[in-house]
Amino acid sequence: MSISRDDVRKIAELARLEIPEDRIERVARELSAVLDYAASLGQLDLEGCEPTAFAPAEAPLREDRVDGRQLDASIATAAAPEAEAHFFLVPPVVENLNP
Amino acid sequence: MSAAREAWRLSATALAARVRAGELTAVEAVESGWEGPGAEWEADVRAVAHADAAARRAGADAAGGRAGSGALLGVPVLVKDNLCTVDYPTTCASRILAGYRSPYDATVITRLRSAGAVVTGKGNMDEFAMGSSTEFSCYGPTRNPFDRERVPGGSSGGPAAAVAYGLCPIGLGSDTGGSVRQPAAFCGVFGLKPTYGRLSRYGLVAFGSSLDQVGIFARHAGDAAAAYAALAGPDPYDATTRLTPAPDVSAWDQGVRGLRFGWPANLWREGVEREVIEGLEEAAGWLERAGATRVPLEFLPGGYGVATYYLVATAEASSNLARFDGVRYGFRHTDSPDVRALYTRTRSEGFGPEVQRRILLGTYALSAGYYDAYYLMAQRARTRIRREYEAAFARCDVLLMPAAPTLPFRLGEKTDDPLSMYLSDIFTIGANLAGIPGLTAPVGLTAANGRPALPRAVQLLGPDDSEPRLLAAGRVIEVRGDAKRLDGKHETEFTWPTKR
Image (cartoon, rainbow over all chains, first blue to last red; front, side, top):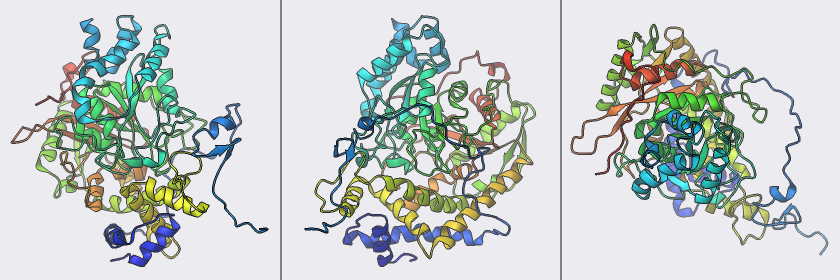
């Protein structure tokens, strides 16, 4: 298996996901199956193949132009689970330094 | 009155012509699909994720007020639940976006409405477009109208099934690795994945940004052409759209005389069902009858594409789905002591198992120490695959191959085996990696041997901007190679599913 149980715990933390202990073995097995399959790419002759990050399209980078279309703050925050006075509300991010 | 009741049987272009002529109202054109086939099929098939009679009525009234103009005037369209619409929820069939309403329309939705079309609802899908069967939806699976024990394909299974059973003549989906072309094959309809950059992705919830493309379902080749003409073209809101005008598809009914179609038979020497191969042989015969030439050639086995895709797409998905954290929209875990716990608990409860699996895979492929071995190698393999297509298109104008290796499979057959589900996209993934367009064309049903007759289909692939010749070849397949019926003024009868 190319992915261990510890690998699963580590990447789950990076991805901000919680995998219950009793599912870790199964997830490791499923991810390993896909990665082992992906290892077949090692058989391809990639000599002279530069990485393609994007499907080639005749879409050169261009400057953004402001065109007057606006999203009012009250609309932008309307779908938030918690918002107040046009701000998104979250639990404390840093601990209180001056108790 | 009966003309209005039967309006759902018409092609989109015929329907729009009647609405323009004042023979039908837009409301009649839209409601016909809901009152007839919708009432008969929807409870069993469950193609629709969000329906709203008032929103539909408002959309039809807006179209009806346009006094007779619009290529798609009054035409109802079911759009996949990952395309932003102001008048329906947009949830990607995910709990994490429960109840979300977008404050803006996707560009393709704006263009649909400009052409007079009416959004008739939001189509069911695999959560965040990750899946090949429409079983990974928080609303439950969509079923195949031709056999309700089988899947409609995915991830855009809702719009595909709805177009097949008659709710609407056109549907919109998204195709990141085959999510329009594979369900089109399973439901017996046309499915067009345009060239990357031809249809705007603005307002399409991102999955794999370098692969995603909005796609079109239709029962007729001419309707797919009409929808493409209405939707394609540059969009200042999407920097990946091409700046040149989209190719003209108005010659979709002009035939394929002189066309060379590639025949990469090594791809179906094993692992492809017999009835799929028989469908290919029939379609090849029709193309030859219409004056096209078969060019046998060898092609890189599709497994390399699958391997490349599941590294590239998951890496991009792990980045794109980082934005779903319970702060700005949708579902939030309500009892978190700090913001990190809020992120983790919201995501763990909000995302389903397949989405979590792909986020983990992508996170791994991008993580320190594995980047070169997986992600970078996949990007290089992508270049190799693009060159394979370029070499093929030096010898032929289009490639003919299956859209999927199997007929529609049974519900539950692949949900516990991710890799086997992924391999269901083996013939479609390459076009996304290379950015080229592809078209699924139905070729009629199998014999009913101990089970209901099931749709068969073929896929046509071409170089960038070859949509005109793909649609022309699709039209030839639609009329079984019969030159006398090729002209677009001949309406062709669609092969409808029947209720047992």
